[in-house]
Amino acid sequence: MASQRKRSKGESLTLRYLILGGWALFCLAPVLWFLSIGLRPRIEIITPQPIYIPSFSLDAWHMIWDDWPMAAYLRNSVAAIIGSVIIDLVLAIPAAYSLARFRYRGRDDIGFYILSTRMMAPAIVAVPIFFLFRNLGLLDTIWALMLIYAAINLSFVTWIIRSYMLDIPKELEDAAKTDGAGEIRILWEIIIPAVLPGIITASVIAMIFAINEFLFTLLIASTPDAYTMSVALSNFTGGSDGVIYNAIALVAFLAFVPVFLVVVAIQKHLSRGLTMGAVKG
Amino acid sequence: MARIELTEIQKSWGPIIGVRDVNIEIADEEFVVFLGPSGCGKTTTMRMIAGLEDPSEGRIVMDGEVMNDIDARDRDVAMVFQGYALYPNMTIYENIRFPLRMRGVPRDQHEGKVRRAAELVELTDYLDRKPGALSGGQRQRAALARAIVRQPQVFLMDEPLSNLDAKLRQAMRVQIKHIQRELKITTVYVTHDQIEAMTLADRIVIMDKGAIQQIGTPDQIYNDPANTFVAGFIGSPPMNLVEGALEGGTFRAPGIEVGNLPTRHSGAVTLGVRPEDCTVAGMSSHLSGTVYGVEPTGDITYLTLKAGEKLVEVKADRDYRAPLNKPETVAFDPSRIHLFDTATGQRLS
Image (tube, rainbow over all chains, first blue to last red; front, side, top):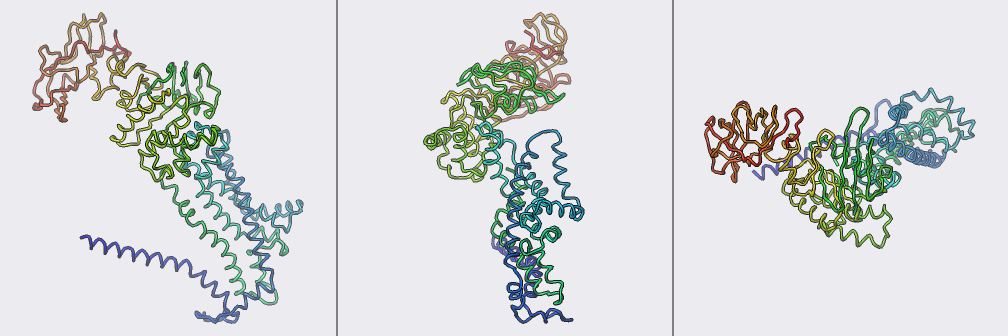
């Protein structure tokens, strides 16, 4: 009886690994395929029959680093993204706390307004934003990119953090009040630590959106001073050389690496964050 | 050490009245329990004492000082919550220390005070754990330690034991009473459990529908309930309440006749008698009915009789057994019969 149960448990574990392994491979295949395109000679890409086992070549690697200021692009991307996430958190945490905890007239309307900024098609505001930043003298700077990425993501960062705050039992704040804490202390010492998984989750999603942002970056950036990885990709699609697929693949892969590293580093918090709502405090 | 006075307290949210006309004086070092069914306003009243809710009307006075406009954090009260409300990101040590930090207690005193509070609730071995790693009883004790650590003027406890199992609840009850007596801190305790109220309280405040029904010692509440609500709420099983007519000192209802009542009232009256004040097959019977159910529990047998359409519960001898529908008579202890006005529910003197 016992051994039978043990065996069936072992089998289910194997099955679980098989299914999860298959799923992981399925998700990873495009990334690996991309990488393999980036690391093969250009000649092997534009063939009628796909070549599954390509020859290895660092042509594209040398090209993007030697002919293009790829380090500057990468630096711009990382700086603009980190800056935008910091701006988002500074604004979104107090806003979310206010929306989640205080009662005042028009609170729900304000909450909906914040969310509604996300509903509009970005192209509608592209031209006004261009003139706005031109008048501010911020065209072609990563400061402008920070502000734009922050503005794009602010609504859902606020909304995610707010929903985590709603899950915090009201008793916790009442306890802190009777223990002698003021509103700022409560936010800083009780609320923020309690919603940390939510803050991390929202930050990662904001980073992913920001690194993929293309339209406004193209509008604002015109030199390597502000070019980011996403816009850099478009460098390889025109000109006398035609579409340089292996360089595109390699740049796309490089753009994927920073987010990937962040996610790996905070994986524990992320998975906790995505399931926290299900656990009753 | 504080006296608390609530005067004409009312709390309403728009047209909804949560608490009305609450008047009570709580003496220094007294243990007062607010008892009532859920939604009766007892927790709201406590939250107003804590400063977590503002009364719509009335005054809250502590030691002669009006508290209405003073924030919760500036009142010297400590509260224990039903859901413990421990800060999940802090260790138990940090949880207990939190009020000391917030109230500006000098840093060098923290360690000693936290240890003493933890010793009082027997939690010294768990100080470096997070609340999530503790059992329910341990969490409750941690919450208690956090409340007692800075020796507040007033303890407020909002159903602190209701999330614990029965055995633990009894142990914690004794512990809470012991700590309160030892620290001599005025305590207000909210519960819907009458056993907790009876065992802990110096005085019980019974509330229903936002209003106080009776204030008294546990004995007074049990022996002289002010109205039918209190009579029916306190006691397990509750007091039997039978509606009938009173005329010339004799109460009559189908199957029930009680004479020689020392009262001059007449008309529609509700008679109340507790199951333990009834004797089966007494010499002079007041009730004659048929056996509806017999429930032996070991030390006592609960007998339910049907008199007219009314079911009356009686505590019978542990060996009592009877078949269904057997005719049976019961005598009431004449000194423990309660009479209430049926229309108002109020006790008749």
